[in-house]
Length: 306
Image: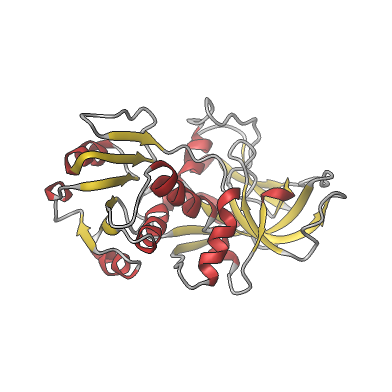
């Protein structure tokens, strides 16, 4: 058994493939034979050591949180799962472990896949679906008929947010590159802005902005909000309200509460899961580098292989 491992903090170049054993499950745990894992921007921050104050890790560390696979063994108190079940879930960032061939995890954090859901699709869901749901509705309080601007609508979280906002009856405006305009429209966006040639700052009376980018994009987003409008930021931890407009950081801690909802929407045919590219476990560095460019359309997947 192998895992992508870091022994020091840095860029993707510090990741190496090493022998690995997950150990035996405790009474409430399960061991999952991982089939696929997805790469999130958070993984890059964890590998760089930037998240140590929030999600401290001990080295050596196996990165990765989002995964799917097959249960290989369960603890004595686990009754809702059995060996052979197809499952997916999200490991806590401090624990990591998804970029490996096996993972030891609390059984309560696992959800059974929809029968027609592929391992790649399932691995793409936990962080993107959960973050989008939390940002739009728990933090952003989005309501039917409201106008929402979603930045990077073709990205992992953005593509989920476009669909969820559309299903909720909002008027959805998204930014994307020219090559992704039609794709984002197909997800349910009412308007799509080519961020390279059009200025989203001409918009007005936006109720909610989902900020996935930070920096100048976040700064310029304040001007499009109506009075009493809101920004939910995935990037700017220190965001504060401004001139009668709310600004809140979205702290995504656990995907577990959202997994069953993801399965239900997938079964109902209401969820498209977009994959950008697939890498082998031995190509984890390349997968991380692809995400680091910021130009992936949908999710970057690692197939672990056995």
